[in-house]
Length: 391
Ligand SMILES: Cc1ncc(COP(=O)(O)O)c(C=O)c1O
Image 1 (tube, rainbow, N blue to C red):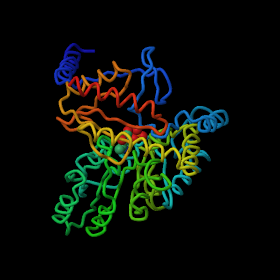
Image 2 (cartoon, rainbow, N blue to C red):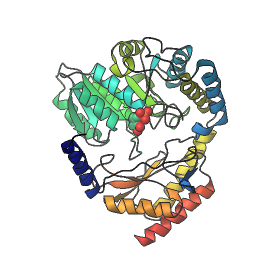
Image 3 (cartoon, protein in one colour):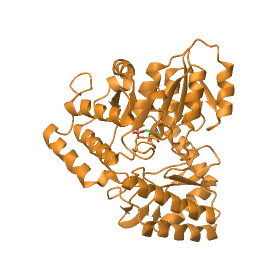
Image 4 (cartoon, rainbow, N blue to C red):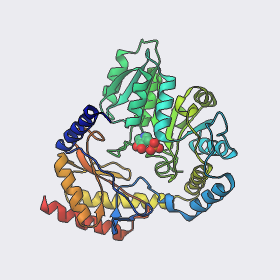
């Protein structure tokens, strides 16, 4: 490595450190259950997106194992060459049925699904209306498309309409792009109003159901089901890596949309397909989610318990209506300190800082699981109260 390059790297890292934004990776030495092992010590974690605890579900593991034994560890090719097995096709049918759409397509991750979908559909003449708190993968997809990006205030439908009105006569494609559950604030986009505006102003609606899949709606299929707008969403993207407990991203929609993406989405075409063990895990998880809403109800009950506690004790938290419950601290250094104090008291919740959230809104992002017990929650409440006194 040239000296000049090495110095540049070091300078950049020093700057990140000076701004209290430097990150190091924490090694977790156990599976992702409510109790985890780090450096030989046990912690209760409130930080994973494994909302229903399915990554360690025995039925899911056994189903994935069967597939691993039969099909092996990899597919050895992209979907258009050797990478489409019977299980890829089967999972896509299962997702379409779950999401109540004509068809679906599976990518290797949610990130790849977003960048491939947005950039293949939108181009430099088009307009993307994007919520200011959208996930990085939506932002990157929009940037990659070279479209003109118009950012509207978070969940502010008046601001969105004001911006749509200005371009109402444009003949170019227009897309409204939003998370359905926002990854860092946990709140829900008003999809009922978004689909109305989209219809009124002739837009394509694309939503990201990463944190809603398996969590919201009577059957757990997401926010499009919760708002009963499944048939009005043009592009319904989600991930298999959070409540579904596996890995992969999907887009659900019309047969024509899926055919288009199979032919044009570069992150689908030029990428080795997912191993079948991951697909089987997703299939089993979806079937368990459809079969019983017991775990989802327990998740809601955990959410309500924590909301009540935070409200009663005057924490500066966002009332989200989902298992993502952020306590806003603001300052980066202070947030790091709170996270450290939590860890010293046996609770693992990393600090969330820019660029994951806007500057000045650093936070402790609590995420709940259906298998957090009352004992886990009691411990969290006790430690939060203790820390509140120290601050
Ligand atoms: C809202 C949102 N969209 C997309 C993604 C990307 O999904 P994946 O982790 O499957 O790449 C994530 C999380 O990582 C997310 O939070």
